[in-house]
Length: 293
Image (cartoon, rainbow, N blue to C red):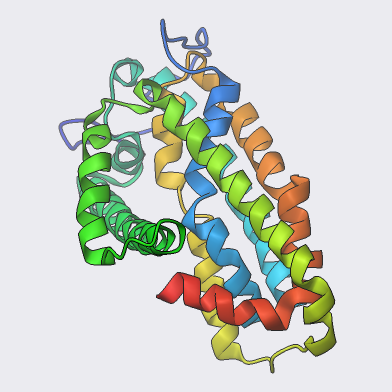
């Protein structure tokens, strides 16, 4: 059963299901650009928080959860791509501008109540992510100003500055209008991973002498799971990214390439394995301080 705009339900057999020409937009992003957008969407605060997740879960359980998370979220990302392609084929109105594709998927599957519920969840999630990243950025910038130029500015004032700088960019229409931000996010996240790895390698000779694993506990494991789940959050933006592609039916390529880039990039692999084997004990206190201060 599917839902129509007037709230009525019809059988799948009534809806036109004949194979039509694959939809193409006159302008938009290519699939490599969309892949970079996905990388920028997912490699942010969540990736930076992965070290403390491994500290809480333990090396082997933590890596296992990360790998399983990649498999499950990658599969659901592919399913979302196929779902939106199917919706554009069945309902031609979705070939035009659609500001909220993810709630529209919920509407066609479960009705108007599901649409409003999903929209609320997306807004709540985005508010939480924006709050965490703004606090983290303001704290880091405040510490940087104090260390680099000796200027003491409280992070509460830096929050206002960051909000004023970022706010105009939130007024842009759709992802294809600010794809440069995705490139910047992917590059900056990769640089952050490389710097963490470099620092861990530098500290390895000292840390290896006092290296020890913390005691395993299910409480820490569940805390780590929440952090890792946060790192894989971002599926709500997948249909929006796909909708702005010149060839939306190639979104699967974007998902595959973005996950390969994120999971098998040498710097992140080294970060998630070797760096923590040698620098586990010394780095955990500094990581907690960075993320909680």
